[in-house]
Image 1: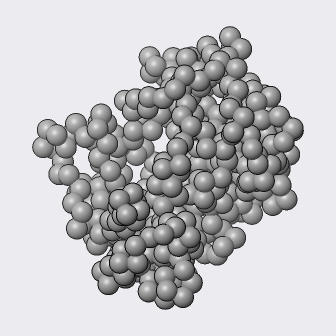
Image 2: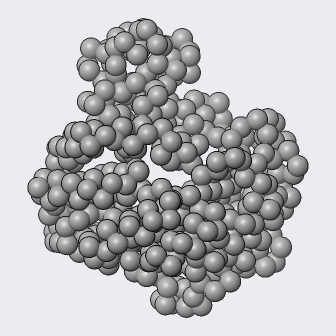
Length: 411
């Protein structure tokens, strides 16, 4: 079951934002996220806001969904007004966006373009399951203006995919990659490590298979057993073991070693790309605290220090929009302390590092301790005045964040 939404302040039915959120709107990068909540099967590890088509929860199918998103985008245009800049990134995520016809995905992109325009070289991504991407689909996406496809490969090992409840055939990943590359779009592959029953050899096989496909970008995420998921229930019953930290650390180190040797460069703790040009600019906007409007059930937006989230269920989302109301369930205005904590939490994850000026009058002993513990790069901290994680620091990023934020609060 998808997780509960956070609590927050009431969100006005008009969608109107406080004046403070609009200050400097045109001076920051602006992205659009579109959430497509549909899947063929809900994977056992997933706690995203997704629903299997054909079940009682989504008995009506996906027809008309793109038109609902366009209604929310029209609301966004009214709320943001003429000061909103051109859109620099569009990311269609899910769920499985390619459960919708390619014409629907292109239609939503055209709507974004007509309302705000796209910057030169704008990045436009859709996520996809490998078994939903054919040469016909890929050609239609590319012709419609998409520039990047992120494929949920997860693993190259059948028994690992089975544990994750993934339905695609590992061999189908190569076909999907080939179809996307033939159009000139960039390809990203998403991998998961730490699945119960996955050996280090299994993980090596997945990495080597992914590298051999020559994508532009690879993400590798440690499996988290989220409460309320089918996987969590299986772990609780003793059917599967809980992922172990040491095992996941070994697998992360293997990923970094193999990917680095293959010419990939880490630019965020869980992400590697072949070049600066193939980094995911939409996700970088999240990590840098830029502005984005997120359309769709359960989607979370951020503009000018105000964060809000939509109602979760597709039916509730539809009902709000049909009634002429904002689909926002609640919102919060971030305090200075929250904005600081998020800047540290996200900034230290980037290879470009966190400028020391962000943390202000930090106790020099904290920086010295992080250096002596081998968690941050000494030269970057002392010469370049930036906090950049070492490989050990990437494994212990939460520890670095804890030391920086706690000391700043108490010191």
